[in-house]
Length: 488
Image 1: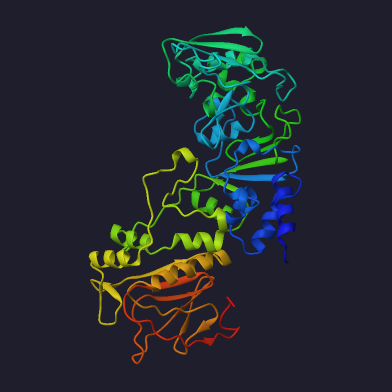
Image 2: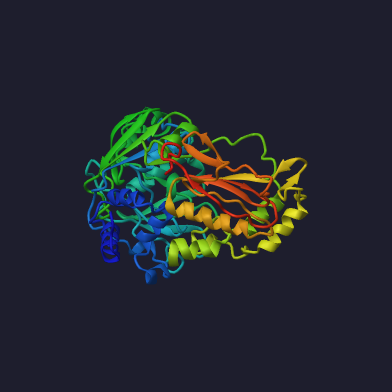
């Protein structure tokens, strides 16, 4: 399949504006060999000129409600209750958040966003008292609960009474105990008065700990009766989705709330939140089998045995100096690929200005010497009998494999030599090594042609690297047969 630039740009625009199927677009782009990060950049930067300008999330305006199909979520710790104020962990908060909403919350850039509030209180608009003793919330009008009843100030006041009552045993009580009283100024305005000046004025009614409960349904279930409410398992909220079915410890199924107060939202038609299992199986279900779209809390246990040499900071620093970030960005990702030394690259306010990156092969070689990795008689760097050899692996993806090639080339240009192999090619003395679904080619050294330095063997995304120094050998390859090389 081929696409010209105009057709691709038009397709991206239709996906961004919700008039084309996003999943079909992603499947097609992945099929063409584009990487996930590059596809994401396509969607946020349709042209090179736009790639230089950061577009705020608020610029995206959905054109319709629904149309996104089913969203499959996997929480390996399954939710057991759908009342957020009685939650026993993040799993219960998250499952409840699909149904219930707070007055406000943070967006991905850590900005305050009003949800059930009409605006964010501030000193400028008079919402936050200058002495810190009160905050006034103006509530959004026209919001209805899933049963059609109107959302009002009474619901916000009831939520405080429910959570702050010690007999309720709410896990969110700490966010409400600093409130002295709440005054109802009208049906859609409340004034929260604190017991003392409070800097953290938005703790109550904010984010996951601030989800608002319906007074007309739960007023008789305060205090000791809170655990007996049938709505703990069949919640009625104001959120974008209504509960369809909930099996505690197993699965929660949701469908769109047709009268949701945000126009043209949400995107997905239904949501399935499946629970159970463990982190490893959950990661496999998302990353390998594709049974689910998103997995939560992927805390997969790492190998206990330390790596022979990559625990040495000097080795890792040498790697960093030998990676040509700028070439990778310019050749593979275009204007949207910006080289950086930071792991945390968003939101912008959290991007560290104190880190730098450098591409310097001489410094990299010097660090290897400093770490004690000396050139042996064959030219390969060794230390205490250990060869400086690593396996550089990625998925079968053209952009990622070209990234491998750039990194390999930079390592080759260190003060040492390399003996590379390429996909579907091998020297006469090469033997085929199969590892699971990967194919690697290990090259034997000929006594007549010493192989010194960075010896790299790779095929279908795997590359074996041996680091040393010397002169670059000749390349004399013969083609693999189709029966011997599955990566062909």
